[in-house]
Length: 606
Ligand code: F6R
Image (cartoon, rainbow, N blue to C red; front, side, top):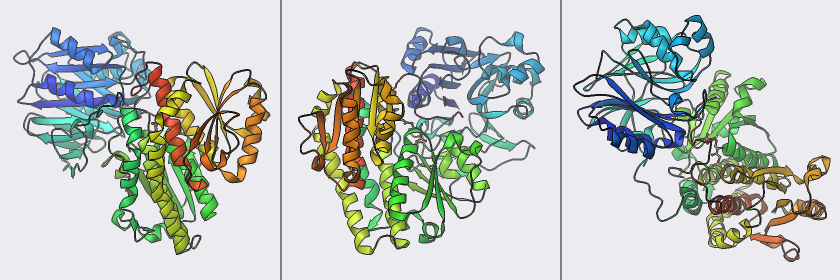
């Protein structure tokens, strides 16, 4: 996590750094800071505070300074609490430094090099600054090279040395740094979002190479001192100029965008009514030859994996695992060249997913990713990439990324099913037709959002809540429950309803709120029995149910009916309804819906 930016050039640095940091707040918003070389003095001045970029802007206005070279950081706290002293940049002697990642051996380094007396913060980062200062004898590159070889963990380090005003150094392991020569000068950042306003051409700093950035040039050298040519890339994605378009929060805007971005995602992958990935460069052979599938992802993206798993099992009858990326490498996964490993990620930067994917690649698996952000770290290690057309997702809680990732997965399953003879051409076309009906059904539920706002009042005051369902409904609720807990801070547990009586039903008392989901005809009667069991114990049940199945239930519960689609496709209207539920609970409570506490949009620490 953490956003990093650096600038050196002829223009004023401070506004540019602050504007860029604002675009990086999705990486963390606990505290923020900049370090700038004061023109004519050559000293590095630091401004930092707990809070957001707009807070720092006010601080900077109080003490104006002129600078054309500086670095900045927006923090998601790992080591050390959310205090100004722990905000970056950290300064030690002649070194000023910002860092993204975790230096795992910071304690050992502190002891081995007796740095304790030099440290003023609780961070792992300051240890690196102190170590650099220890090794710096007038040659910054030499000091950097010596220090990084001692570090364990992931890091992106951006540094300035007092004796070289106007020069910025950077080095990284896993955590990304992109850099570009722009009209205004030289820039680097932890992700492209911060560069998109200034340039379309950029390069990724190669791992364990030192980038030296001066006002008119950039030079990269590896640890042996050999020059390295940057591999220029073109940014073909809109990253700026995004507004809320009249919505109070991005989350609502992004929920409302789903019919359009879903349609966009499937449109270019359907040809003559059949799924077609030729424009993505994904050959039939890849989908035909694998013997098993393994999906690695985190959070919402992992929930996409669970729905895909249900689909693959029921249509393809194929072996498929869904693994939490953070657990993957440590669970001794069985992988070989016949395994298709699919990474699902909105940002393409989630370090757990990235590392799991790299591990899979090493084991010889074919690596395909389903991503939203172009040019991200995961895209660079993928054999094949399928991009969603969600567009930039700004709200921390993922909504449109989930439905567009599923759109890709539904198409992929259709393609595999046809290629492998599990669906005939006619059946495949019918399936694709139903997928094309999804946007209008999402529209239908969005048109009734006021109804969901009213229902949201039923759970507004609760501290704990259950969400219950079976089969695919259970998987949908895992996502619905995650949405509710992250934006409303209500403790919400999704449970497979058949499991309740094996323990958790003990928690159901008079008025306990229970959100139940019923969209799967074949298990409806069993689901309803489980709902009756909690109702009999006094639970206040809010029932989300497929319209066709709802006929006699409207009197017994608070009911939200969901537009009819074939059961396998009900995830789409159902999740839109649950996203709206979470959104309204959070906004009615007066929370900052787009930036829930403790979270960050891009998760780049393990
Ligand atoms: C929840 C949410 C997270 C992400 C997870 C993975 O609303 O957004 O659970 O889904 O952190 O992120 P990506 O998809 O960027 O890999």
